[in-house]
Image 1 (cartoon, chains in turn green, cyan):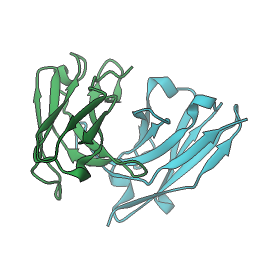
Image 2: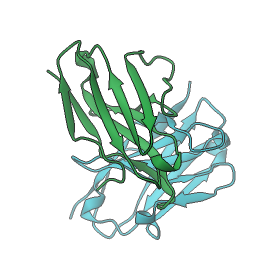
Image 3: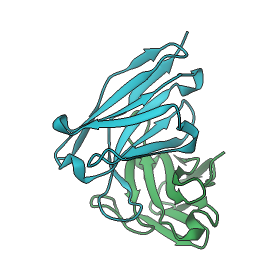
Length: 111
Length: 121
């Protein structure tokens, strides 16, 4: 069981907007540690999608956005495209575990 | 450009050890912590620990302490992850990943291609 909780799956039609939540606790997100998001396609290495809660690396479309509030964070994807179908993971630091933690991952299906 | 190239597929028996390498290029190797992350079949990403290539300092996830050792050879810009006393549930793809430099808990901006380790009798 992951320290950061994500929904196992979300889905949306092309062009729609979806959000993926990442719920933590007072020992990680709630303690002020930043949240990062990764996109993972089968057979490839994870790709950094959002860093330090809200920032997009160069090359990531502005259809992807992140937010953080309290003990949770969210990833929003607007204008869904077929190529967005992937697993998405949130990441933060946990002071109780003294280490990095990932969410359990969310599989995005584009209908 | 930054590249992390990992060693190839490994098949090991339970109780054995495996050592995976990660050769870095395109940047100054000692300048960034290197992390190891694994993904078991059908499971999510799991952080294993990091090594500071500059001084060899390490920090391991509690789950792996006593069974994992991370080392580096700065002369060839290569990081290593050795996992001992392998169990069937250690079957996974193992990734090395570079942490963005700077203070604080930075994201992992470059990842290796992954190394499949299969534990089978």
